[in-house]
Amino acid sequence: MTSAERMVMVAARSEALLVDFVIVFVIRWGLKWLGVDYLYFQPILDQVAPPLSFEDFRYTASALFWGTMFFSCGMPEVILAGVWFAYSVICLSTLGKTLGMHHAGVILRNSEGSKPSVFQIIVRQLLVPISSIAWLGFIPAGFTPHAETFHDLVSRTYVAFAPKSRTAESDTY
Image (cartoon, rainbow, N blue to C red; front, side, top):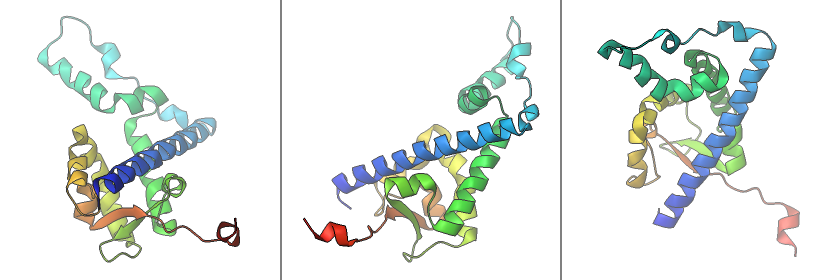
C-alpha cells in the first residue's frame, strides 16, 4: 500500500467512524424517546468540592477519557458503549460493514480476504476501546500492509476498499 493509499484509507475509516457516531447517537436519542434515559446517573464530579485530594482526580481522569460520550448524551458511557457494540456487531456480522463503512466505501475482511466470522468481529469490537486509549492502537496503521490497527491485528481482520458495483450507466459517456 502506497502512502497515498494509506492516507485515503485513514480518511475513509475516519469518515466511516463519524457517520457511525451520528447513527449511534440517533439510536441513543431513540432510546431516550422510549424512556431509557432514566438510566442516567449523577456524575460524582458534582459531589467533589475543594480542597481536592489525590482520590478526587480519578474522577477527573474518568471525565477526560469518557466525558465526551458521558456528558454530551446524559447516558452512562457503559450503556452508550453497549449500543455501539451491538450496532457494530450486528452490522459487521450481517453486512460485513457498518452503515458508515458503506458510506465511506470500505468493508471489513479477515486475513484470507473473505467475510470475518462472528467471533472475529466480537473480538475486534471488544478491543476497539483498548485501541482508542490515547490513539495508541492506531499507530500500527502506519506500518502494516493493509493499514491495520491494534484491534485488526489481534482479530486478524483488516479494512479494505469495497469493490465498486459496475452499472450500465458508468460504461457510457
